[in-house]
Amino acid sequence: MKRRLENDNLIRIYAYIFPHEETWQHQFFNLINSSAFAPYISSIEIKGPDMGTNGTRLFDLSEMLKDPDTQFFNLVEFEVEQTSPLHHNITMVSYDDFYDENGAAGRILDKMPNLKSLILPSAPSPNFFQRDSHPLEFLSLQAGYDHQGFLSRLAHSTCFPQLKHLEWTDGPGLPIITSYVPQEHIRTIRNQSKFHLDIQETNLPSNRG
Image 1 (tube, rainbow, N blue to C red):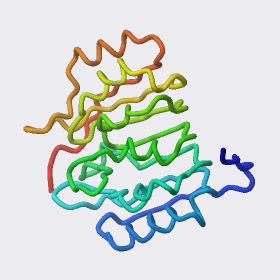
Image 2: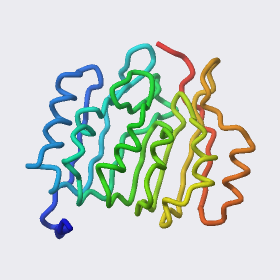
Image 3: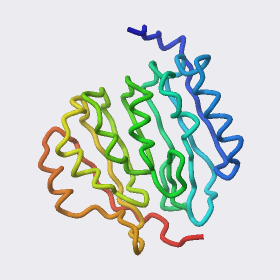
Image 4: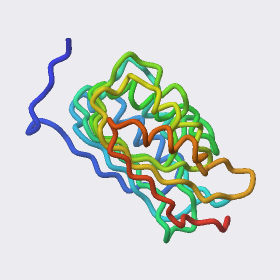
């Protein structure tokens, strides 16, 4: 069993990343995913300018999420800046894929076994639920380009016994993009009294480019 460290011995990271600078982004994530840093980080907050390609501001987390032997055992808060109604680009997190979340959120939980608060701009893939139990307490998500059936899966899951607060924001509702959650999914999770649910339909950017 790894020993939890006291808060005054831990590092809080705030990173302002330019999404188009892929080399620097990969070097930064590779650095904090090392045994010299990962065990001593208590929180990570990632933000950046409203810049993107084809209307997408991408934060590629691949370098941080690879190497399952390195874990952020003391990390309790992880946030990637969500899309604002004032933005011109839709924000995405990904694992080695440009337009797909591709399991990044589930890999975050794999790497951060004591995470309490998670804020992301993309809906998680099914691997988010592939675990017996996780101590997550607060979850704030946006649908991104695909809601991935997340709310329905969460309503039927049992792996987050301490999760009490959920914030959800639908995506831009563009043609061919499945970011609007079906009403039956919303009704299903609203019937789950264990959640304090905040569902928003924010006017996220709908003009690409």
